[in-house]
Amino acid sequence: IAKATINEGQADPGSPPTDATPAAASDPSAGEVIILISSMPSTTIVEGNQNNLRMIFKGKGVNAVVEVDGVEPANKELRSELFGISGKRGVYPQVFIKKGGETKFIGDFEEMTSLNDTDTLPPDILEQNPTIPTFTRVFKDLITKP
Image (cartoon, rainbow, N blue to C red; front, side, top):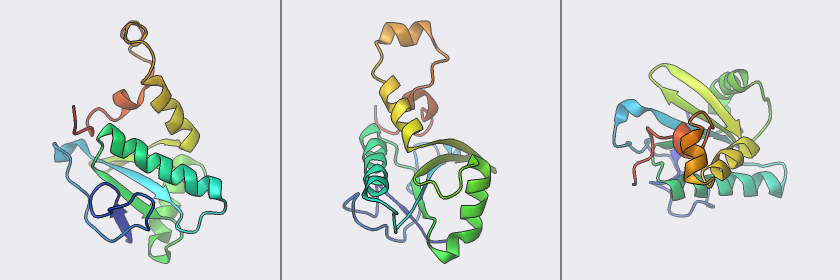
């Protein structure tokens, strides 16, 4: 499987992924984030969305991130499995959390942007509404910086 980490082993988030092993989170049992990307994006919008997502994860301190290139022939089986989980074929980027033997679809770029935006809600609103999904709540086990 051709995959790469985005926060370690790749100096520039806009550069093509390199083969690397997933970066270890502070707690390996917390799992890892999988981002399904396309190395041949159909539009500059998709390319920009992929780069923005890389920056969000890096900025939030999520280091256990693995990119899976959906265009790479070696990833065909995994890509099909991820499309099956999300129900969204041919949509890039897509984000998943893999923990143990289970892979859970988190969202596409728009859903990830919404999660990131909800992190900026006033703290009292978030405290009163603990079920509001936020980036920090969804990825809490994978964030390595305070």
